Amino acid sequence: MFVIKSRKIIISITLSLIFISSVICISAMNNSLSDKADAKVFKVVIDAGHGGIDGGVSGAISGVKESDINLSVSNKLSNYFISGGFSVTLTRSTEAGLYGSASGNLKRKDMLKRKEIIEKTKPNVVISIHMNKFSITTRRGAQVFYKANDEKGKLLANCVQESFNNMEEASRKCSALCGDYYILNCSKYPSIIAECGFLSNPQDEALLVTDEYQDKLAYTIYKGVIEYLTILESN
Ligand SMILES: [Zn+2]
Image 1 (cartoon, rainbow, N blue to C red):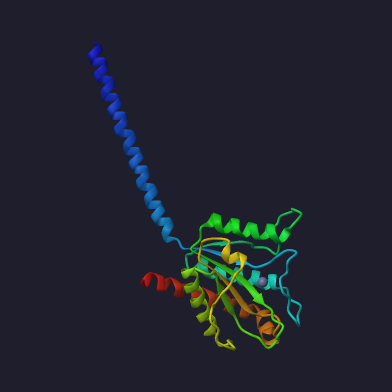
Image 2 (image 1 turned 90 degrees about the vertical axis):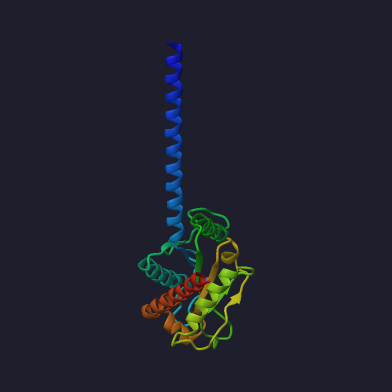
């Protein structure tokens, strides 16, 4: 009787182990498949610069806040990426800054929150949208920045800069520049800042305040990112 019982127990344990290892195998396979599926979704973080108490620079003629234009271009850019099947995370989707109701160093809290969003998203690219200002008011045009030692970021910046340079409104051809900025340096992901034009220049400002030109800027940036992806996939 004892032997029969033992055999039953051994068979039962063996079957249980086979079942458990099958479950583990299937689960591992599913995880691996979903990892592969996730890897195919290209994730973009779009960062609308400034917001809340920090309006950024302002239009010399209209007084428009940079933060408002940044948000509008970011939302339009987001729509292009979503239509293209990309996964999009916006660091801010309203006029508010990212410092909550906290007091103290709000700018620092705002920037740390942007870093937190980027790190949580683990994006393929980060695109920070800004408008420029310069003491020489004749300075015009879009300028793209990338961070030092970020080869993918540099390629992305070159592609987006080239796309800006090809706009019919482009007043001059620029090269993408290496820049030492927090939003570029705060994560390991390929990151660019797109300074879309100068609010200190009357011609640029007249364009930047219009919905039509903001949409054109968004599409131009989107095209640059698509070119970046095309080059990456061909290598
Ligand atoms: Zn700015």
